[in-house]
Length: 142
Image (spheres, one colour):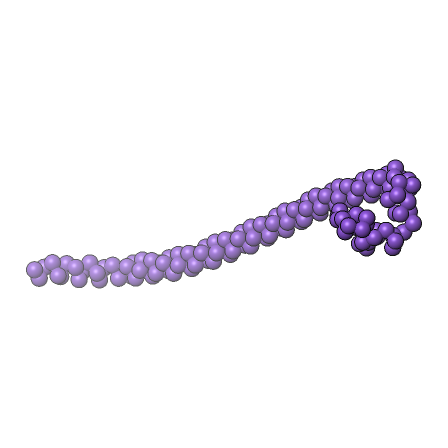
């Protein structure tokens, strides 16, 4: 950050995270660089290397993020498929159990009805003559 304090100490310099207000407390290399006697190209090259490294780190982090997102999505998909499969199996079991219960109840009712019909047939076979006489007597009375 540039700032002129009127004494020729024209700017602040950041070195290793420390803000220096004047050149006397800077490391020697920074003093040389400020005075034009240092290796400006080396400093610029180091800054470019640092930027390149930072970009590589960001790209790697983005790639990892993408891979992690894919992995999480695959896990979600497998979980959803497993839940769907389990739900389908439970529904099939419930339907099968309900169908079996319904068939059992229907068979019981058929058996009860068949038994009642058989009893009525048997009673009719045994008493049909008596029923016929009773019907004729009611007709004769009228």
